[in-house]
Length: 558
Image 1 (cartoon, rainbow, N blue to C red):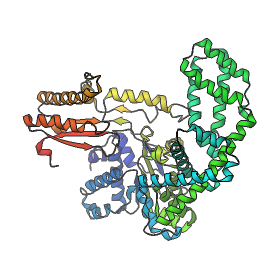
Image 2: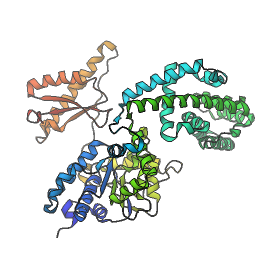
Image 3: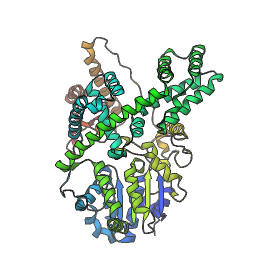
Image 4: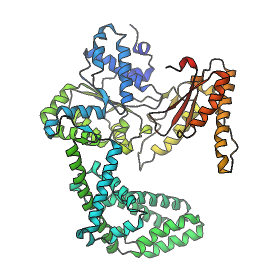
């Protein structure tokens, strides 16, 4: 009988994952490590054991990833005579995104939440516009409402420092979006608001202080530590602000040290800003201002929250964050429904676990905690956490890795990149992830990648071509033409050197589509000579990158 390594083309680490039967296991898997192939191989082996797809819950973050996983499972199942009858089950199986799973569940249990069974999903762009209009209405009411006027000192100060009311409206909507995902707005405190609003400024302040730290002379170390403690104090959400009562002489000494140590002039205004704020405002003044501001914003956010919720209820349309909260609410408030779900799934696989939110992590914990019936596999790479805008918490991944009761099964061999690229990535992320204040991860253990495809090291270095830039704006378009001709000639040159190369092997990447018409015009010229066909396409998975692909006629229809 062939081993799993031979059957699926696995390496030792990958085979170990497929064979593992731990209650909980986590797979730190870097890019190019074959994690999807390994995960699919494990799923198929377990399907053979169970004889059904029913006990499986496989969750990921994109429709593309879910579709690809289903296709791979289908491909492997077709090779197993004993499993071919399950092919028809794959399309309707619970191999899907978190969003799809949550929506299907809520629709099935809509009556529990008094929701319409035909609820829809809000279009992000449309909903953003609606929220802006609602906030405008709230702000107009705010300017007329006496309850705001009685305590508008800092509020009006903040308004006048904004470039426009529109900017203030966008800022308030953004604060609402962040806070409503973390808190019930009706139970929100001033401290929550103050911390959320002040966080960007505190981060900037901390960066400046860290810069000063490397430049200050030794006798000022005590003041640097004092300021660092101040940052920590505010970040922890303390609301008494008594730590702000710092002696003026401390700031004078620090200011003098800046002059003596010749710190860049650009840093002085930033320190002076905070020096003035902290030195010339008494504790009572700052305390009063921040709390007045928090009270006003709190009232605005509560009024805004009522309008937003009313709109959603009337339209019976919700965001995916709402849907996931509904899912959590139903499971927490219906022991019967929760127990049925806990009994249904014997295997839970979570791909890209580093991108889970607290809500998603809490949902998984409800299914897993004290459930001997289930086995769980978390797969991900903390270096690839990209969904912070959707409340991704890579700290969840770190917590699982640090849990002594969870088996660690790292995939560290990268087959996609050269050794030089791998060395560079390891160096960068070791500095980031070893930071004890942020992640405190031993990057060498289970995270450091190794180059697995030595043939890539023989590839030539990338070339850099510097093109003449025209200073006259009216001649600027000629830059684009010259660039397009240079790229076209380079492609032809490479194809003449290597007969195996085809036009489909080349891609031209741009930040946006601005240059596409010029490239099309230039390559239409080449087409006359070489019968070349150009296809313009934008990469769907990475919105910021647009790709121009060149294909020969025989591939044009595919």
